[in-house]
Image (cartoon, rainbow, N blue to C red; front, side, top):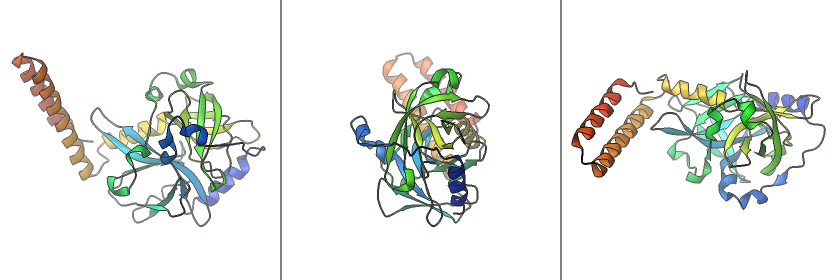
Length: 288
């Protein structure tokens, strides 16, 4: 993939003066041992590398999708053309896993947010505990007011050698373009790593580089790119297989809801009215 020369230039020009003092992930294992399974090292070109992570995105009341997230300057629109493959390494493994891009795999990339999102399928071989959960407060209120001075972790592969964590603080969040200023140490290869809320170990952002001649790093508050990704799904820009799965999940949840009401209520008229409402919802709502 041809994006890595751009990444090297980006990081080199914006690199922090001090070498990062990242710490081993051992301290994090005591809190959530599976956290290291949520982060990967992404191969981009012959000797280039960046960081990516796996998370779960809820895109409506019934359905969610598992994805790989990283920066646009790690994986861009050219890399997402059908027929290409994305290669990544779990933990410190030497053998890469492969994601084949085809016209049915859902993808999203944004230069503005410097973010790329790729659907992960069941047959891609990832474990159930490999996916971070998103902090629900990401979609609420004013980001700067809610998250300024919050303690965070950056999980990453600085210099592409070993998975590490850096601790830091959110210094500010721009409401215009959702840029995060933070002070977690980083290095070449850290781009694309998840920024995780220290309080609940849930995802709030993605690291992308350093500010030239400044004492802070840059990231993206994930509200912006994830809302665009969800909009893409709900605007019917989704393959037929996924539509069928979504409708099936809606039907299952509808039946479960009705059965639950039947078990806990003797008022048959209420059940009938609710069942009618659910049926109309399924007919009227276009699958996205």
